[in-house]
Image (cartoon, rainbow, N blue to C red; front, side, top):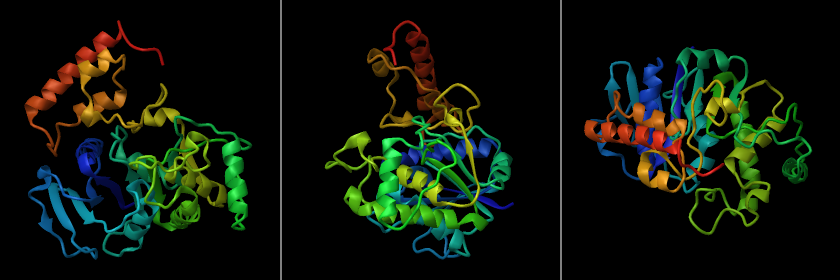
Length: 322
């Protein structure tokens, strides 16, 4: 199966794109990674070249190594990139110059530690997703009841086979299952007015997306819409547990750096003084910062790795309780 990878970024998230790519390469990925972006491209892509073979305006391609290519696709949208995922994936799968048998989306604050051939098998079983740190959310939870009430007004019925609440940072879809992406997009389009427009998300600057916070039906915007789409979809899904993203001990597959604390911004000793512990994803990020793509110089990577080890040791003696 011909599988391609995609991600979205703007600003400092380019560091995540570099390390995500390094981790995918380490675990066997060879092929094209489609990177949608807004703003400027980072210095580590300076050897990129214009690519007119892809039917998408302004594409540039960075040949990382023989067999590993990053295609940078500029985006002209005011939609928050976290809400743009289904649109981007559908555009890629429907475009004859970017399409594949299957497409994997990873947020750029994820580090992969799973053999790539596993993903090819996984998406054959259904839409591949991973449970969120807040999973499960019961089928009669007030949040889900709000979804049922809202979408019933649009003549859409939601039916859930489980209480799993998935994270929006990863999804794998075979091309034959593209209808799911359309349902995800439709779910978001319908909720747009409820959140003040799809340009808003939990990552937006003030004013915040909603005033109800976590008690609001759509405070997680794209992620809530993704879970709504699961309730509409009549095909197969295949969902791994919370350990996959490193939220709980177990089989960690692709740890995800939730929240505003990103691995590229960690300040080990300062964070230790605040009582914070290093996360698995923080350690792995700096482990894979040295790879085919080099967003940092070697000394900085080595320095950060040493400081994180010191941080880990010190955290055994002082840290704030969870």
